Image (cartoon, rainbow, N blue to C red; front, top):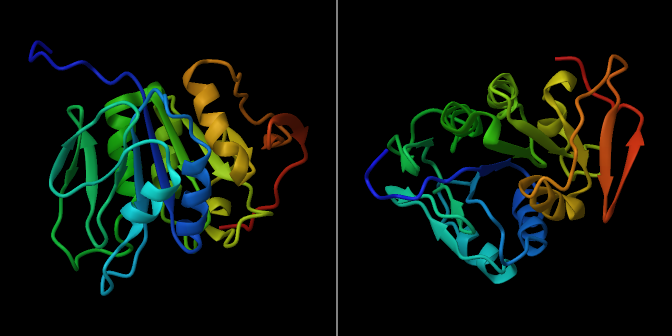
Length: 224
C-alpha cells in the first residue's frame, strides 16, 4: 500500500472467558515495555455490567491499553480491549467493531476475531486461548493453524476453567504454556528466539513453564 502507514508485520490475539480477567492481568504484567506487536484481547464479559477490563489491565501492564470503540489503527506495543457485547474483526491494519450489541452469543466472538486476524496476518499471527467455559476460539484457532499462524493455549491442567483451551483439537495447538510463562514466550516468538514445534504423531506438545521449556506428555482432552 502507498498510504504512508507503516505495515504491522505481526499480531497477537488473545481469547478468554471465565477466569479470564485474572489470567489476563497476570499475562499482561509479564509483557516487556518494548513488546514488538499489537495485542487484541477478546474477553467474554457480562453485557449488563459496566466493564472495567481496560482499567484493570492498564494497572498491571507496562504497555498502553486502549478500548476499541469503533475502529482503531493497530500499533506495535499497544493492547486493544474488545468492548463487551460487541464483535470485532481485524483487517487493513486496524481492529473494527462489526456488530451491534445483543446479537450472537458468545460475545465478543473469539472465533470471529481469530478468523479475521488469520486472514489478514497469516503466518505472522500468534493466537492465544486462555481459561474459559465453552468452545469459542476452537474454530478460529483452526483457521489460524491452516494459514500458518502459531496457536498457544494456557495449560488446561492449571487453568481455572480448562474447557476452552481443551476444546481445541490437539493438532491445532503448537504450544501449551503455563500462564506465567505466556508473556515471555510471546516476546520470544516475536524475536524468533523460540523454536516452536508441531505436535508429533503421539500428539506430544511442548509445555512452557516459568523461564524454562521442557517436552511433556500429552495434555488430556475431552472428546468433542
